[in-house]
Picture 1 (cartoon, helix red, strand yellow):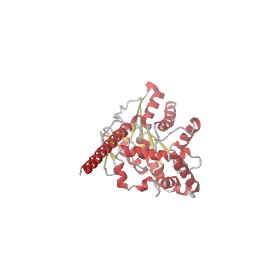
Picture 2: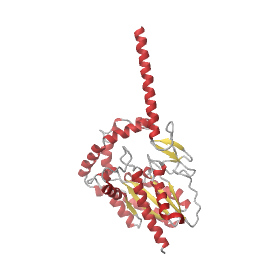
Picture 3: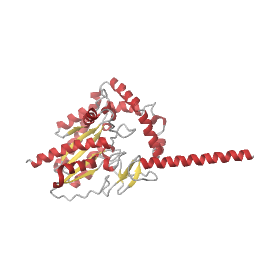
Picture 4: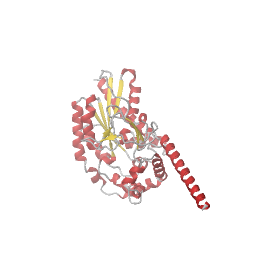
Length: 352
């Protein structure tokens, strides 16, 4: 009897110790994530009629590895209250998680870095205001709605729309899904509900990122192998471009009517940047589409690859264990590219 009691006590002590260790590990993982510390995850979203969701206004929460500091307009970042003075330059950024700045500090998102870059270049003569309307989970069909219902009301001078590769049917998206979401992947071993529940734990997010970081070289090699076998990429990339052209034409018309210039760009996957033989994806088709309707298009994949050629392959431009979202350094490249486009426009306006 005494032996049984002793065993039970030891098991209880082990269980308590394990719980304490896991709890401490969870708190450490949370402390390591960007933004203010939060004890638990809370959704920053609410449902609306015409969009998948919007941010809850004034939300201050941690969710899926990102800290959400949402202003009274429902946008990430500080309050956006333009003065509409003649020396004010207003820029609106529209997009998905790559514009929102998933897994980086708000100050490191490309819209905020763009604001600092423009302010530094323009000096005290102009006051720069950049609004971040990016929302995780949005796609190209949502950008027009955001433009019409939220962006135009602040009378922007420039509207920048950041597309993502998964906005379009394309071979690179298919290859990526086969590698990272196929039957042999980690995602396939867990049900959707389990992934959603585990995803609320910072410790799970850290372990997941560590797993993908460990497999990075192997996964990129597999993407390269599958990409080399893809046939008919041009046809796949073309699918959906007619609808995208119509949306882009409408966005351009809305911007023109409001006296704003529309600028577009496409965020690359990591494999596009670090592999020489990966499928180009929809970039060339999207560029041709935008140029055909006289809308500036920034080729970010080329910008990222050029940075690697200058600084070396060891340069990391994406979030740790993430194949899709740039890190602070990657967003700095985006900000500088967008700034160059806007500064050229400012110079042209001043030269008239």
